[in-house]
Amino acid sequence: MDEYAIGVLTNIGLISFLGLSAYVLLISGELSFGQQAFFGIGAYAAGIATAMFAWPLPLAIAIAMAGGATAAALVAWPTLRLRGLYFAMATLAAAEMFRIAFELLHWQVELGGERVGPDGTQGFRGIRWIFERGVEPLGFLALVWLLLLAFVLGIWWMERSRLGATLRAVGADPELARSLGVDVERLKLAIVAASGALAALGGALFAHHNTYIEPRNFDLMLGVHSLAYPLIGGLGTVLGPLLGAALDIGVLEGSRFLQGYRMIVFGGLVALLLIFRPRGLLDENLVHRLKK
Amino acid sequence: MSDFLQNTLDGLAAGASYALLALGFTLIFGVLRRANLSYGPAIMFGAYAAAWTSLNFHVGLGVLFAVMLATTVLAGAYVERLAFAPHRAGSAVAAMVASFALWMQFEEVATLVLPRHLYAFPALYEGGPLPLGALTVRVEALVMIGVAIAICGAVWWLLYRTRFGAAVRAVIDNPIAAGLSGISVPAVSIRIFALASAIGAVAGFLIVTTQEQVTPMLGMWSTLKGLLAMMLGGLGSLPGAVIGGLALGLIEAHSQWYLGPQLRDFLAYFLLFVLLAVRAPWMNTRSAS
Image (cartoon, rainbow over all chains, first blue to last red; front, top):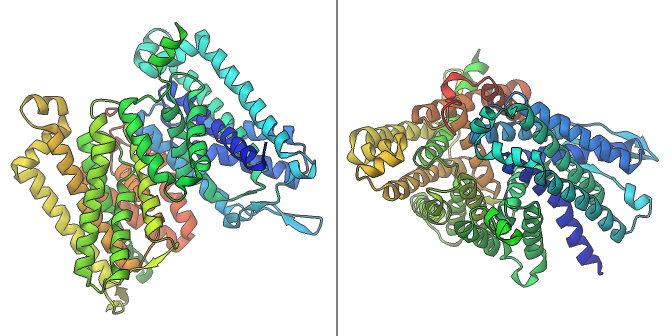
């Protein structure tokens, strides 16, 4: 496989974590404009762990996921009773606060004659753990996709279980679910924390793939992209967000003949697609028919 | 004390532009119950059309304004047709994501036509600020405040003194009942989109002629400020949008003075988050879905 294809596939994998984090929220009836913040928290936390403290990557990823889950739960805990656009705006406000906090974060240490660490709007460079360990691009690609596969299988299994049915019931009608004895608030808090951890995992891998991150990476643009992936790919199956990300990055990067016009074509296609399939390509009806 | 007054004056001018952005957002939200993420990008698109005209032809501000107004309204109508009309009875999320997809289109076309990161835009007023006692006031600020008052008055007249306004208010109250009583909801919706885009174009024109530059960031900036002001004033209320815009301008001006630009933005988002979390009574957080 050539370097270029490896790069595209790695990017699809990385961004798919963010798409998955939006997906688990969407199927339980929540709309978040703030998943980019948890992706950013994962990126910063993991980068700080490996580049500044020289901790191993698995530990850094664990810290990132714990940080993402905690931050998401802290955001959601006071705002869970809000519905629709109100909750979306609360998550957006929180995400922008995190982004500004990254801009204000100046914390560097001397390492081998070099200052390493987040430097506000100047960004955070030198997150080189995988290069210093001699991990080949193909090896990193495998790591990203193995982790992704593990979480996709986990979510797939969860959706087939009683928990998955409960989640979709809460998404379809929270009041009805409540009247059937579901503790809606507790369930939502758990799913929000899980989605924060998923986004943070993607961010941790992104930081190590890019070696450089800056606060601007984690703005509303990224957040709405993550929302678009499950909606393009389809809300009927956990593979939806992956398909959405693959179409976006694949079409964007793949079709070089469209260079300069790719967002015009892609934006128009997405708008048209949503007219005919408002719940995405792999929507519930299609998935149901395929299963039969 | 004079610092305080000066900041208040500057805050009112910024707040007037936020109020107009929030007014446009609220008109669309009220009629469609959908957030239009492409609202700011359509304004940015209009500003780019005007900037392109100004670079290629020697024309006055009046022509530039006409170009910006026409382009923004057309862009708004395009968004309504492609992202909102098909989802009228359907999914709000699909409509929002579709409006985001069109945002991508606007941004790409704008940067294809004018690829540099920043373009100069002719100034609204060439002279310096006017003295006002111990304070100074920029002519652009006075124009902004005056225009905002005029537009709010005109919108109020349109909504409360015309047949069209009665139809719009009926649709805002209950679109199904309005449709049953013979009001054409699609017709109201496209006209409201055009009106909101026109208001956005006026606000955007005053902003770019005051800042004397355009960047692609104007799109996201307008969407964020409009959303923030609309939410602060209580989602869906037109007087609330104006008050929310002015409040946002004042909060930003004072916090910038004491805390600097980054904490200024932080404070505005923090305030919105807290008001949402405590479910401030004017925000109707219980009723809307």
